[in-house]
Length: 143
Image 1 (cartoon, helix red, strand yellow):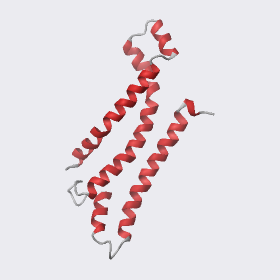
Image 2: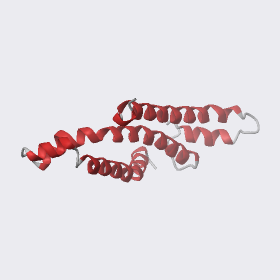
Image 3: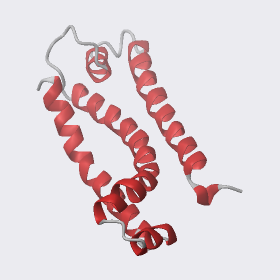
Image 4: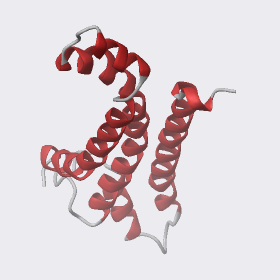
């Protein structure tokens, strides 16, 4: 598999999640007071969507994007570990590094530690970023 194919596979597995989040956000905002007021003064459906609904529904998508990024990193590393990653040996990839280091587990177990730590730290970092964005952008979380 090449890098564009891997990116396409990960994107296609995550696309329904984002579509469901966007649909839910739009359905919940559809009956908001400002949307009803805009509709009552004669705003068209396209204007309502572009000016009112989409900007207010982007917050859940941004948060879901940061959380999905962590999952995508783990997915790509898993594909690389299984040997389904990027075939070019000059391309540094954490899953391939783990696969290569697993052959030397008995002689040098620390070789598994650093790529695994990089995956964990990056995934946890993106999850914490997503949680922080959710807390800062969600108006219902304000105290």
